[in-house]
Length: 288
View (cartoon, rainbow, N blue to C red):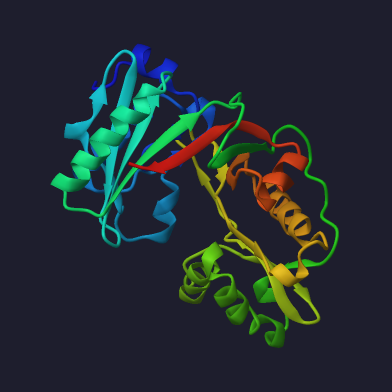
């Protein structure tokens, strides 16, 4: 075993795992960290990796020979060759000096690996006074029934063809939110349903794909979705309607929970907080 759990566990202020992202706090075990090291050798997706939905090969892997694991802090670097390449160092530790050490390691590895990007990912606890970056939120489907959404939300495939054809320009407009990529997956038939809202027979909002997969403990997780509403129709409650419809879909299809990452104080963040989700902490990424 590489990691000493008595060292690592106190350093985990938020449930973030390199190459996997946020996971359920109950699944935050030494076995998961050992799994990501083994996956670095094989290049395979872990069975509970959300990215395996998209097929192909795992883009990001841990640089296991460069891991720093000490009683006071742990630095876990990863490498992605996407684009011009990026090294990220996940900085676990309670002292602020861990960021400086992570930045030094990230810059060094970016140079030796000949990649352009060097970043530090710092998990922060839910009690953080002035958080930045993304908030990790938990929707627990086992607590109470999800409220039925108001308004008309349908899977894209159930709209008339004339409405369905408006998804392509909507997706292109919202490409920065991942909708163009989602549309590509939809056309390839490689993803689950996509829920949509229409105004005047035109798609103006979407959330998807809707998929439930087991996590590291075998519990059912509603996978993260791409989620966007056209700017010109915001303020009408369509985002809340779409989100509630997605939560109802997940609960109906047996999901135990969903983890969401929302930009602090962004529209999705305010929506999730208003809906009573549990904050598990924050992830703050900076340039080295």
